[in-house]
Length: 216
Image (tube, rainbow, N blue to C red; front, side):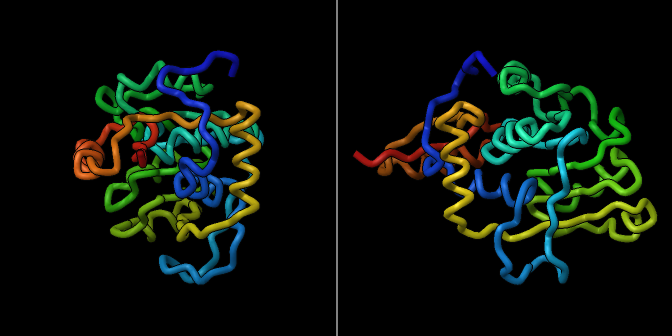
């Protein structure tokens, strides 16, 4: 990635610790053994090298970091977002882009190895049809998923986790940021006194990166 995408700042990993750890622990290494509140079994990331990975919500705080980590690990990345984010995501190195306002990804994609759905919730089951047999669906917000029977018939693993603090993972993210292997995009910046405006911006959705609060 030689060209710096619009809206990208060179920011230390501490600027986006939760988003970075979420992408890391879902895709690369869980890094903790705390009980999983969402499922009985431990979440297990899958090897990414040479695999196809679809990221839904690819322009958001977790999504734009996830696409970069997946590329770093050697995956073929399909990004799902609205058209306003296509150039941004292309600049981050995604291999394919789907504008969900024009085409539902579950209607046009088949045979991927892994789906990371950064939205999750009751609609995440629609991605089961995009996966190959033996694939994996990782919804960041798994509550409301009702496709367990269909997933079992398709041989698809559906897995989620609760992200935990991990100093070594943050340190590795910091090294990636310092060497421009992964970059943090800033959607908007607000003073701490304007935190309400930041919440309103988040509620409008369609973020491109992270919202930052500054302390004078």
